[in-house]
Image (cartoon, rainbow, N blue to C red):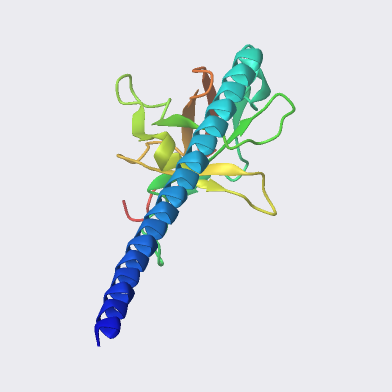
Length: 202
């Protein structure tokens, strides 16, 4: 009986010791995993710092040529479809707006989607002095973003509809467009004259 009692105590002690060992082993494994994760994070941070240094060095090396390497606007022209436009739709006749096809071009003459703002003014140059302005509209770079079109039968262009705030007294309407290039800060202008038919019955 006595032997059985002592054997039970020994077994109990072994079980307690085994639990303590397993607990320490689990804690040790957790610490190793944490250490490995820390090392991995440190390596990632070191790689990020190295990449940032390389980027900084590259930017410093090319800073004098960065703007030159970006396609830049050298002129703006009107597409040949620019002219009177009917905002009312349906069977309504005549024009109550002008639709402007504006094409920014680079040094090679290619159309480019340049970031910038546009101001358009419509004039009746045959009107009495002080009454020449027929309409005015502006577009921010964000607004122009949605007004860029690529076509198979026409050059890429910005399409801008500018309403007539009053009807011209003559068929010829002069359009003046100003494009401010947000890369260089330069302003480019273009002027053309189109024929506009006043809305019928007005």
